[in-house]
Image 1 (cartoon, rainbow, N blue to C red):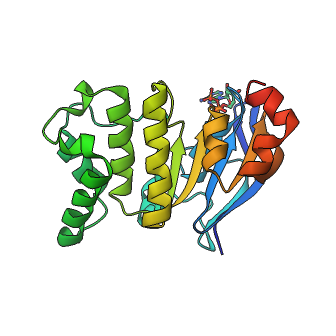
Image 2 (image 1 turned 90 degrees about the vertical axis):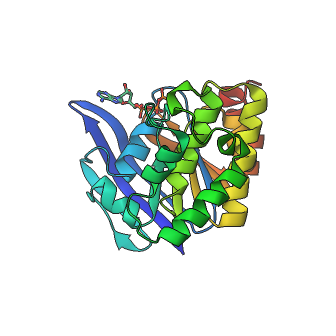
Length: 237
Ligand code: ATP
């Protein structure tokens, strides 16, 4: 069963045709990576899927339901959560308050409390910093908080935009380990957008390669990692 289907999606910014007729799907339980260079259209694709920008044409469906042009907060209640590029946490709020905000669509207090504890076990660094103002945390900690906040909405599909951006290699590894864990243990399907193609493809079941707004290649993570064209263009060798 496909949790997400995108058919013939087109996005324009004025006269700029940023997304050109792309189609792809994600099966329930998968990690799917969308890779591509700067400006290829990765962020625009995520924004279109999560209702943050209008689309020109095309169809998007979530769990078999047509959600084209559905506003962002409604998509959250339908099980989609988006961790945007640059994290966008509430810097003036504490870690705990950020997590509470993540659960804004829910009112199952006991479950929220349980999920909060689960977040602290997934991200022990956040547990140590519950009362710290989010804006004073390191880039890696802020990335963890952004992911934990999104997970507090209890999503079945998590969209991650460049989670590795600006992080030291060890932290990148830690974040990717957590992504795998969320997928395997918590059954969250993942759409991962990354410039770090190597990492993104090594944890992905499948991947798509975007180039100037079009999907030019698709395959399993393994196939793409060993594809000579991809190696030359995206993996530095
Ligand atoms: P990056 O990794 O640099 O964020 P990306 O693959 O996510 O790149 P997008 O940010 O989706 O790419 O951008 C795709 C294209 O759309 C680029 O040519 C970009 O300049 C253009 N674009 C994105 N946002 C806007 C906007 N608000 N107004 C005009 N053009 C935009």
